[in-house]
Image 1 (cartoon, rainbow, N blue to C red):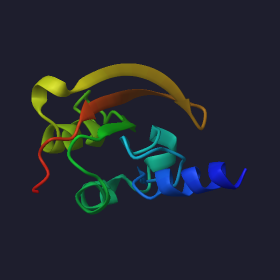
Image 2: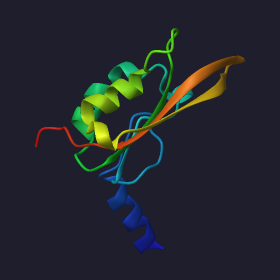
Image 3: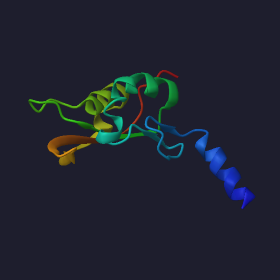
Image 4: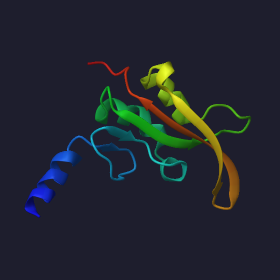
Length: 113
């Protein structure tokens, strides 16, 4: 049991989650649209400070009116190679309102080393 606690503590050391969720050191987690709505403005600074090249950037964000790209898509374009970005647009219920949500997944590759 002590060994499993030690392993969890070691794995958490490299983990990065904007919203405090559980992850491992292979992921830089920006959270779901409902979790990160208030923190997404901090996400660029968070990625620069807490995430590493080679980590998988994951997250979702609300699509603004007019169908433009969400903030998480813009962040992915900033920190990931364009060819690595996978996006999916879905609909979700946010506090009783139906909204479009961009889900993003890509490998971070543009952080200075």
